[in-house]
Amino acid sequence: QVQLVESGGGLVQPGGSLRLSCAASGSIFTIYAMGWYRQAPGKQRELVATITSGGGVNYTDSVKGRFTISRGNAKNMVFLQMSSLKPEDTAVYYCWGNIGRIKYISQSYWGQGTQVTVSS
Image (tube, rainbow, N blue to C red; front, top):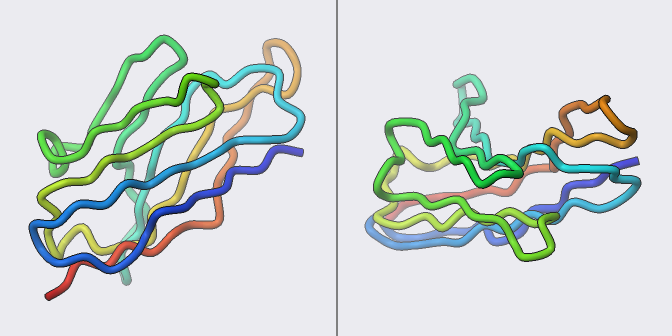
C-alpha cells in the first residue's frame, strides 16, 4: 500500500501565506510525479500544481506567481508554498502522486485532504 499524508492547512487572512506538506510512504518503487489538487464547495476538483521526478513544474493559471511547488531532498515529499492568498483559494487541498509500486506500472494515489480557508 501507498499512503499520502498532508499537513499545514488552516485559516489565514487574505494576503497571508501557508505552506502545505505531503509525505508519501509505503511500498514505493518510484515516484514519477507529485502535486496538489483542490476542491471548493460545489465545485469539481481542480489541479493546482504538479512537479515531476525531473523537476518539471506545472501550475494552474490562477495561482501562477503566488504558489510555489517543490520537492524534498528525499523525493518522497512535496510542498506547496502559498502566498498572497485570496478568498477564492479556499478549498480542501489534496496531495496527489503518480507512484509505481513495481517497475513500469504506476497509478494515482491521493491524500485525505487538508482544509485551507482564506477569510478575514
